[in-house]
Image (cartoon, rainbow over all chains, first blue to last red; front, side, top):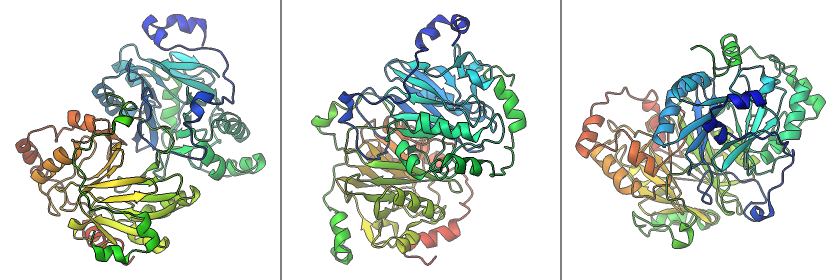
Length: 283
Length: 283
């Protein structure tokens, strides 16, 4: 993030949203102190773990099959919303208010082509809320993110891993303990985002997934931006074994992606222009 | 469960599915040994907790907005499927196979009116699989359940709490550590099942929710049979505070439920007859 942008932040928010430019290693092994808690094989469940884990909610918008994710610190009540959708902003805000949370950041994994982000409407409704997106997205936002930046909420953080290929500005947000990765359209459950518009490049996507996501711990949960089959979560280990596209060779993957022949998303002509002024478009 | 039915079980399955007739207390406080792990306030997230927690997946069927839940023991690989849907049986079995699980039981929370259970088709595809439903449902199944019965898979179990009101045979399945409750249509997120057909009775439903679900620990996750707004999970504390119907007095609740004036579910005429022969109907 540039110094100019940092200076434009509300001081109260800039202290809450601490962004470091230090580059996180792509492979970040868990600490020895935690490792005895981790199972050796693939495991996945939702439940109570040791005190201090972030509050977490997965939410779904059915028209575009988009997942929105709410994370919060249960002590400071600071909250982050990942990939909010315009049509479900009121639902999300109602939940945030009921849970007594303070929404400080709305982040996008990329400039979406299939729906309009909720960021702009959220900024109108939540005083001091900051929008974030990759600096490579070409989209406007309060905070533009780069590889290794961290978004901190209370004692938790999300670290940015740049995962271009679906678009130039795709990123994956990884929790500090590497137990959850929000992969946007880079990696879907048994699938991946298309690469035939918005700077799409199958070779870049393949390398992003293999170098930046498949190097996370095998038990790390994969939370994608979409699912079209009613699946809610996967893991790194599962996708490394069962993803029908990403388990192929690079050449095979490129060939698959170049021959999908998909129709354009219905809302692409209104979504992309709106999302390019992320958080600032006139609704 | 009757002795006759127990005797009809495949011995390998009956040893895995251990059902006790002992009546669990409605209020079952967690052991002191575990309590230091539990947060005092409402928390919810999906993530890794201490080794030994069950594998868990939430799955969605979009036509009837039904949630199916997969739980399994990561050591023995024994798995239970709650409320499978006919149309998504192949998706569920593919996942079960990929994860190397052995599906031993398919349970229903009640005799559904809006979709056909996947139990029958699953029984045709999975050798030795047993179906379960409440004995008060009027539906056929391999195992008929009563208050306090437990379905065991590996070192985990689900305990039956009878929660009639939406139908006579509605039950809630509660994990052994009381961290998750699968409430069927008795309690939905900020809602509840209708009470205007299939033996529906608002007074019974109100008492079921207050006596059998709201007496669980406040942090216990509520996983309903349906959601129509893209919500995936709630907690006991949240529903006690924010459920717009169940926070009312009994008289107010009865009045609300008697004046919903909802149309019948589209598939009621084919779903109920099929589900009354749960697991045995001819597809």
